[in-house]
Amino acid sequence: MGFEVRKYKPREPKLPVSQLTKEQLRAIFMESDINKDGVLSKKELKQAFGRLGAFIPAFRAARGLHHADANHDGVVDKDELDDLIKYAYRLGYKVA
Ligand SMILES: [Ca+2]
Ligand SMILES: [Ca+2]
Image (cartoon, rainbow, N blue to C red; front, side, top):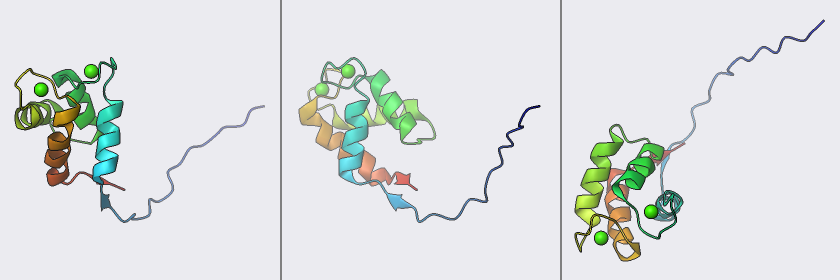
């Protein structure tokens, strides 16, 4: 005899959706530094935008990098992160 665990989805209540704060965005970008080298590569940016629910993460990563990479070394370092956060913030990523 076994219990059949039936998973059913409770009707999802409409949650108020609020925009991510800059602090939350910063945390997500920091966490996306997978290899912990202190800078965000395009690949890591893609991952970050994927987490943010971007429709096309690779596109957002390219745009974000273009926007924030002031010294054109192909990665976003700590000094450039603020610009990246501003860019992402303007896009208005939402969290429920
Ligand atoms: Ca990295
Ligand atoms: Ca850079």
